[in-house]
Length: 217
Image (cartoon, rainbow, N blue to C red; front, side):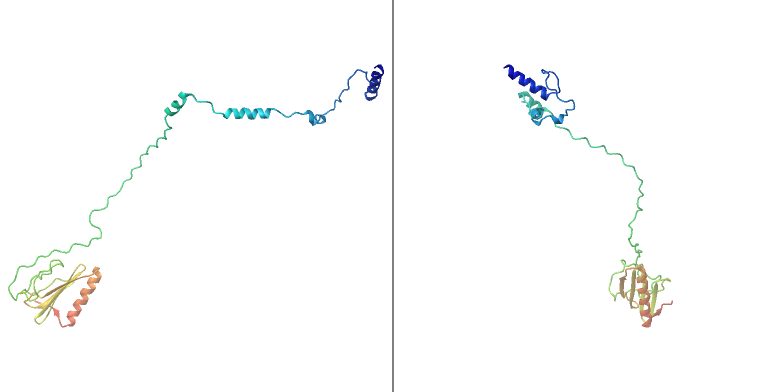
């Protein structure tokens, strides 16, 4: 036994730095954490614990019998009230002038002259509007047209025949027949006053070409 202890002490002297027999081996001061063996490092046990704590936090708590009624009694969230309408700025408007725009002017109203003796001449000459043409037959007794005013109107004669032509707005009205009779009335409407004036001149030229001339007293 003593020999064994002497051998152990000798081997320690040979491995050590020359210190005492009983001094334990000291680790060098320059030892780094990297010198520690991987086997000495134990895995961290905090991660499973943290995960367990998070899992425990999400676990719903048991509801009491009165909690369900309280949840149903809570009113639903009300929708936000609409924003009030702001007053609009008032703008002044101009009223349109009265009357029918684009409506053609009214035709002049005419009244038939009093009846004259047979064979007499109208004075002044009766020139009714397109809606006031006297009714009757061409052979009815009536005075012949006399002198007419200047403008778009002409009273023509050719022997025992007469022709009265005049324009009222967009209408060209003519009367022709034998003296002493009503004769025949004709009313033609045109789209514009200019076209009616052109047709009036053309109608007068036609009668003149047939031998008619202006009536003179």
